[in-house]
Image (tube, rainbow, N blue to C red; front, side, top):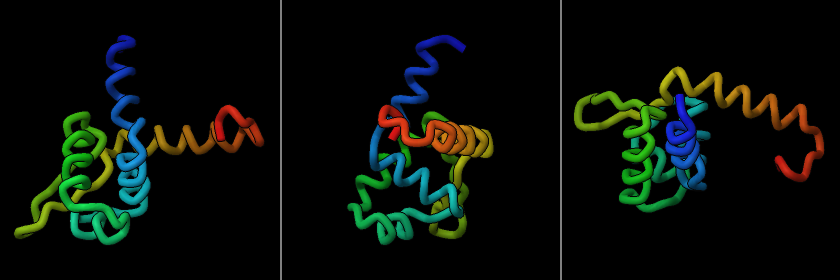
Length: 97
């Protein structure tokens, strides 16, 4: 990988709404409708954020009838666990919190 790849990947996660979506999907897969209700954000904003996350392969989508169900790409889960571990190991580090 090169620094440009890192920049693209982390810039996709640098958005507060996208982080909220990732956090929701970390718990379980969900439809856009479920995310709209949970996050209390307009459907168009959720859809746009999901498109950005999907383009970077952070989330994946499957069709179930008329609904699209979103979930985290399985490669993202270890990254999230590593970030959580890092945050806990920092203790009260003001730079990380």
